[in-house]
Length: 183
Image (cartoon, rainbow, N blue to C red; front, side, top):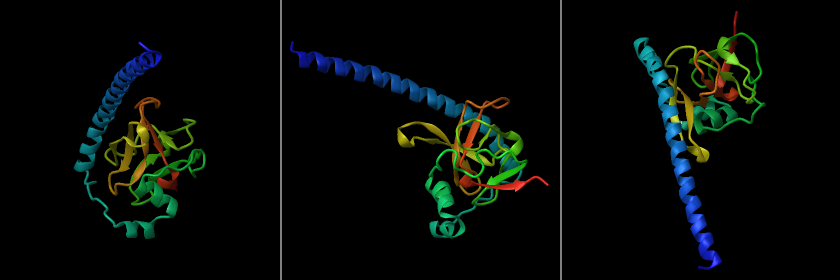
């Protein structure tokens, strides 16, 4: 056998090993997504029982008139603001955060915490069912996307590395939020 044959066999071997590694990580990520969905099923039941099923539907042109260019990019095009640049990433004021597109209450400042990721982070939603979780396979990875349940706007992503009591970190774009100070 020649050297190139050994290299080809070695390349095939590593490709085989890596494919097993990638498959096991995808399966692990899917299990984590199912775990978050299970946690949110009770939230969705709460939403239906409390009349929070009214959806907001608008055309792209209507959203463009209603939202700033940055808000439109984040909420409707699933964009992401650069870390440590958003209006609320380090805010400590008491109050309520709502969806910048439709006004649905999403998070309370009492669940906001410093995660050092550069985006506002919360460990729980303000009311069950106000957000939904969707699988996101963009950018060559698997994440759990957080979406406003009322208007379908992209808010950010949720990770299972947050503090107790939920163990979740809702990593949310400031551009997707409006803030109302506590009175």
